[in-house]
Every structure is written in structure tokens, then in C-alpha cells.
Length: 220
Length: 220
DNA sequence: TTTATGATTTAGGGTAGGCTAAAAATAAAA
DNA sequence: TTTTATTTTTAGCCTACCCTAAATCATAAA
Ligand SMILES: [Mn+2]
Ligand SMILES: [Mn+2]
Ligand SMILES: [Mn+2]
Ligand SMILES: [Mn+2]
Image (cartoon, rainbow over all chains, first blue to last red; front, side, top):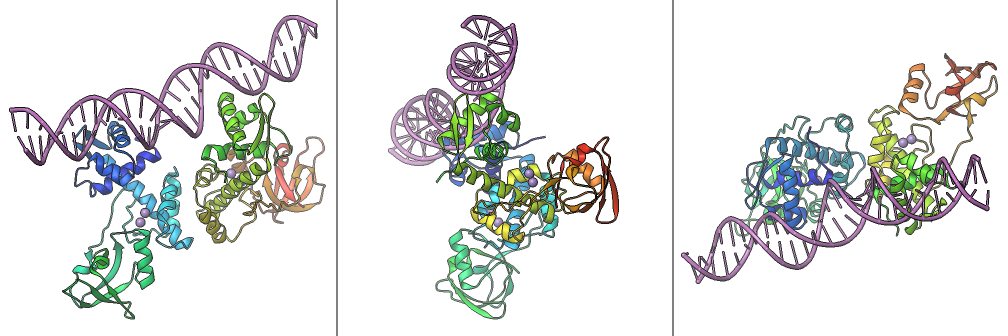
């Protein structure tokens, strides 16, 4: 059985995201930027992850995540997202404050803890940011999504995720009245600057710049 | 502001318990036995804790916990016991399985997390083993307790804690039908071997050896 | 095809937290 | 009071994870 330290879990999760779920190769500098550690530290960690066979690492040529690595990364993501659900649904955290705490919680070593937590939360399929929660075998049911700025005039849907989940952006959304789960309809599109006007829950009208709309994923 | 690492928190909590809440001095070997680390490692840690002024440490003569140390230890104990309540009340763990997981959870660094957890649990005053949960200022409201084997014939009370909280003992209690919170009455005492017969919740009659009864604390 | 640039790795060092073996101090026994 | 036994500390070593500075490799430019 492969076991990873907390640091190794964090690196592997970052690598999984950077590789787009295993589709792309990843460079040392990519990981360095994502993890906010120096390239020299990354080289050392990649050697270790390579020895544990969760990545395939060729010196000077970057890495590819392995099937085993994907499985472990998805388990870590599962734990992280379940704790995010707990923090928002049960402890009333707002969705822009949960990331760091969920990261720490997700490293607690106990299989049964995660099973019970999942059950307690009612087996949620998505986290507070709309990202899918893998099941205990690593399977993910992703919903078809489109960027809000690419929707046609008059089309309807439901906000399911955000690309940029920085606290600043999440707070902005809260302020204007948008949220994960909101049902929306595209009321107007300005070709000139790409801005859109949407109706939220058939009630509230919101204007959004192209940049903002391009960070919002909608299930149609 | 003094900040402690997870390891330092664990040592300090152990020292707090060994010193009976600050009443007694503690030796290197005491700590070594409790923490299951070697005396050499303990010496090193005691030096560090001394430098952080959470203990007063004299080489070769052991240590005393300081007022600051007591406060910090009580905060760690508070976190540990709140997580134990969460695991038992919400995630349906049994009381003999929660210690290790609660230990890991209690090291997550977030003040607001503990406040919200406390609120979510309804500000519990006691953990699943009947031990009191300090408030955020370190104040503890302890209930007057007596050992079950020292109760007089015919006296009544409620089981509030166990001295020995080993999984084996806790499972034994579960099996015979005793539990924290149970209302009991002493029906018979055998002078010869110190064994007792108690009535639980006015229903079930249980025979107990002196050893077992001497591990059970009762609020009279 | 040679050179320059940028990416990456290696070398060496720091802190935290363990360990063993040996030395030193204290406490107990003779 | 001297010797012995026990406790505690020191010295030196190890792993994990991070760093800076220097060396090395790959590749883009000349
Ligand atoms: Mn997150
Ligand atoms: Mn998330
Ligand atoms: Mn406990
Ligand atoms: Mn407890």
C-alpha cells in the first residue's frame, strides 16, 4: 500500500489539477508556481513521488501522473471537498473562507472518518464551489457546463461552479447576489464589451462584465 | 503570542494531565512513558517548552507547568473534547474509537473553526467520556464525583466519567449495559471482594468487580 | 554550429522531531 | 562516606521538508 505524507498529498493534488486530470504533462516550474515553493524543493519532491510510482518523472523533462497517482489525488480531492461541504452547510462558513481549513482537515488519517462524514452530509455530489466530489472509488459524475459569457441570449441554466475561486471573486459574487445553485436567465448581451445582464431566480437583475461572466460555469 | 507546534501541544497536554492540572511536578521519565517517546527526546522537548515559558524546567529536577502553559493546555484539551463530542454525537462513532481521530482534528489551526464547532454542538459542557470541556477562557465547571466502589449501599447517582478510558474497558462497559449518563443505584455490596451490584436506569441489574467499579466516576 | 538563455538539478544548510549510545548527575544502598 | 543503581542529559545521527547558491542540461537565437 502506498502511503503519502501530507506534503506529498498536497503536491499530488496540485499536479492532478495542473495536468487537467492526467491529460497533460507538467513541468517543475508549473508545480513550483502552484505550490509556492522553490523549484529546487520541487525537484526533490518529484524524485520522491516518482519513487512511490504516483508520477512518472524524467529528469529535465517534467512528469506525468500515473493511474495510481490519479486515484490517490482523487481521494485527497474527495476529502477536501467533503470538508468544504461540512464547513459551509453545518458550521455556516461562507464559501470564500473554507479552503485553508478544509486543506488541514483533509489530511486527518482515518478512512472511516471520511465515510461517516460523507454519510452525515447526505452523500453530496458537489462542493460549495460547484466542483464534483469523487466517490470512494474515484469516480466523478461531472455535469455538462458552459461559461456564462458564452451562453446565448435568452438561455437559462443554473450556476454550478466558478473557475476563479479566489476569496475576492467569491465575495464579489455574494455581494451582487449570485451564488452556486442560482437559476439564471440571460436577458441581454452587449457585443461591444462582452458584458451580460442576467436574471437570478426570476427576481434580481445583475449586470456583469465579460471577465466576471467568463469565470462562472453554468449547467444548461 | 506563544504558538506551539502540534508536537509541543501534545507534550503540554500530557504534562498538564500528569501534573494533575498543575498541582504536582513532573519528571522526564513520566513524560516519556506517557508520550511513548524516549527520555532523550523528552529532554530536548522540555528545553524547548521551557524556552517558550509554558513550563519551568530545571535540568535533572523535572518541571512545573506555568500559568501560561495551563491556559494553552486547556485550549488544546477543549479542542480535543469538542471534536470527541462531534465524532460521537454527529458521526456516530462509539466512545472508545474517538481518541486518535480527535487528536488529529484538534491540531487544525483555526480559532473560528472551534468557535463554530462549539456553537454547532450546542456548547456542550462534557465530552463523551464525561470529562468537562473548558470554555474559551480555560474555565472548567467540574462536577463533584465519587468512585462507584466507594458509594454507600442504596445511594443513587449518574455515571459521568471513567478513569480508565482504554478501548477494552469502554467496550466492556458497553457490553454489560453501562454508559456515561446512566442513572444508577447501589443495590448490594460484598465486603469480601469489594464487588457491587447496581441497578441501571431502574431496569437492568449489573454485577461488577471492585476493579471495574473503581474505574467508574459517579455524580451523586 | 556555436552561444546565450532559461529551466532544472545538485550541493549544502536550517528546523522540527525522532532515535541510540555514552556521559553525567542524582538518589539509594552498603 | 563510599559505592552502586537509576535517572537524565549530551552527542551524534536520521528523515521530512524547506531554502539559497552554484552547477548542469535543453533549447532558442545568432
Ligand atoms: Mn478548496
Ligand atoms: Mn472547493
Ligand atoms: Mn481523548
Ligand atoms: Mn475524552
